[in-house]
Length: 571
Image (cartoon, rainbow, N blue to C red; front, side):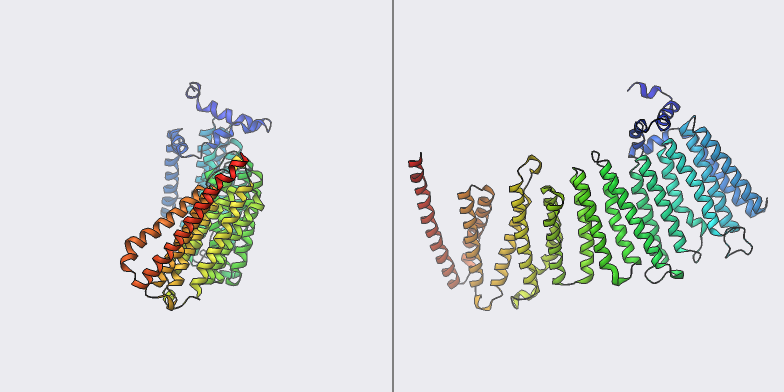
């Protein structure tokens, strides 16, 4: 550790550069140092390194921008001369910085970026002040807007290539951020936007960034590109009001295709990063996966015709399921698998919400979640993934709560609220039983943990108890306290049955759960209903429960007494 601070920065840069000039195997050695640059503390460290040079570069950029603005407004030189001087000056600084990177990587990188920014500032000044590149505003203009875009883009391409060659992470970040902004320079005013051309440029820029990620393993670049692309798309959706059927020159299908290619490119890159770096989880990969799903939703709702919404979302859900299966079979990390599965559920849920409403929507959602949970184990062969995916039942659970307090329960029994609650109870019962069976069949230390199947079964029983209460209180013949008495009788019998089952089978959890239910019913009977219930329902309830308790006690006691007698001869 003592050698690090004693080495000059130039020697560190040369060490990072040497593996790129040797064998491919040795090129991997500097990557951990470079990968550390994207982390939070890396920004502070980057600002401290050669801070004087970077401050000077900032001052030069400001001076160049002011000079261009002042020279144009005062007519010091002709616009063509000014444009030529700016481009040549930026090119010279850029070439000088590239040459210096061979000897002093960080210092040369600062000059290389400075030269690219001077070129961009020069073109921006010409565009905003003289509008050289805008043929719609100035007759006889020198170049069309695409040429201005091309000049600035080529300067950023050179910066990116230099960052890859010398493994300087922050250069790629600067190039990406500047690349996302320069279309504003080409089309500064509303009404000048060629949407298809601009999004084609964004596609090229993103693909170049993802190529950089593939070569350098700078996985956080994927997240940065996705955030910036999402911002640019959101800007169009909100600020420009570009939506379905509102595109100039009928570019809607082309823009939609570009959006889908972007989603697919991010998906492939992110999935490949997770698989290739299976032993090293990256938060950037997880955030990229989640944002990509939201990015897809935005594009579908903004640009896809309404009749194709659901089909497109279902198709993309299948794609994400395929990614989850691929990750599960090639890595041991279940978190990306769960995340991809959650994205698939989200897409399927949105597609379902577009086709259904009311109780049908709730039933469809719970069936879809159950199908995904039950199909997960045959696909990924991991009980943990199946159990974690069952947490998605939170969505239909929350949606079903409104049906517990519906006003229809006071009118009748057979209605949509009953269907939702009954279906959810059955789905939870079947899914919980299946997960319990999977856990019992897979006996390994890898599958240890809290059994999620028990949670689902308990939740199913609570829905069963709720249905007993709601149904009994909706029947006219069971009024004046008889509905409450019948509900409490069934609760007490259920709790007692669970307690006896857990006791005889040696299942502590079932016994405790049954005891809690039984104790709650007895407490309510003795504290609340003994005073509030009408006399006839009270007599019937207490008499029937008394008979049940006495009968169960006698039978249960006899079985307990007979067990030792059977065991003695065997001993």
